[in-house]
Image (cartoon, rainbow, N blue to C red):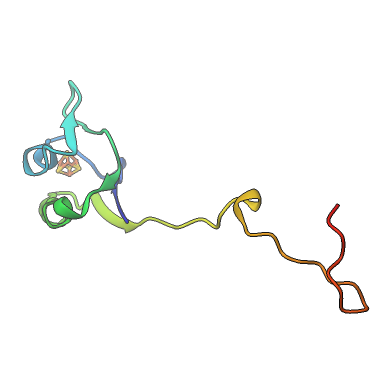
Length: 91
Ligand code: SF4
């Protein structure tokens, strides 16, 4: 999964990214990009890469989304074993 990232210290609010990638980027009244959802769908990834390449300030980057480990309650139960080699009672 890829995410769109804007370096706000580099962006100069010319809005080219919104013209190149209107499906994901619009602009605020000052021309700064507004991103509704940072996640880039696979069908738009090439367009997003193009927008990043053509940004005059190189303020756009694409990053792989980190996949976080599942929450403890979502993990499968691990069987506890007694020293005698039997499953320990749950509790
Ligand atoms: S193209 Fe780059 S510099 Fe221009 S508004 Fe978008 S992010 Fe900012």
